[in-house]
Image (cartoon, rainbow, N blue to C red; front, side):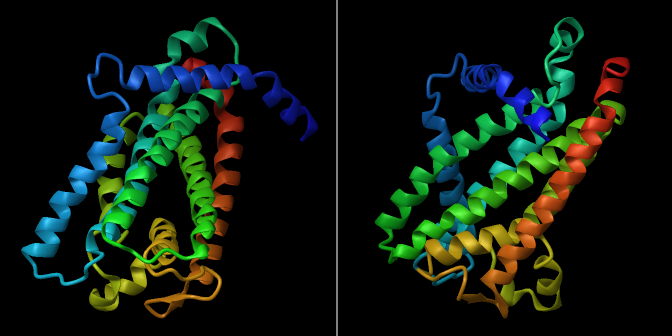
Amino acid sequence: MKKYIEGFMRYRYLLKELVVKGIKLKYRRSYLGLVWTLLEPLLTTMVLAFVFGELLGNKNPFFPVYILCGRLIYSCFSTTSKVAMRSIRANQAMIKKVYVPKYLYPLSTIIYNFVLFLLSLIILAALAIVYKVPITWHIIEIIIPLVTLFVLCVAVGLILSTVCVFFRDLEYLWEVIVMLIMYCSAIFYYVDRMGAAKHVIKFNPLYCIVSNVRCVVMEGGSIFTSTSYGLSNLQMMLYSLGFSVIALVIGVVMFKKNQDKFILHI
């Protein structure tokens, strides 16, 4: 373990440069640049709130905030998983010429997209203020689901980046899978109205993360004492965190075991 920590510290500056480079390239030749990080979820939320709120007669005054919580978290997971999945192949020229730990490529893409996600939380805070959502001191507990989300993104990113090197059709399959995950994350509907399907949705770790964020942002409750749709937020927190940690272990083992074979398949 000490050897791996020392190796990570040796390349931490390179990781930082890759993160900065990723952010710059993402908005290269863009007039809006980082502003689009704030505008895109806001505009999407306005559309979803109109369709599923006004047209379908949803009377919840905080419904736009409800949607934005789910939309931001799902978008973070979807974006980081997709860019991490392609990271090894996207950097194949560098991998063939210079030796650096290969995990830096998926990790850097995940980090810079997660940083952009954290910036987009400014819009969530602004919308909560506009709609006069009651904020309590429990808001500090949002750190727990955000850390869990990061661990989940890293875990899924490592797994996908490994598998995609050997099975490139995964890119097309993952588009369908993330769409299924979106519909199982209760972004624009309420789980208690789903009937028997709600018992399946609760096994989605991303939904558990979304529910925990909504608990502290919208309901002013504590993850450790509140309940959502018959399941305590503490149970959802432990389940999503446990799932993420186990997936991370699997991802690290898979990546480490196969990284030396990447050069033969890219």
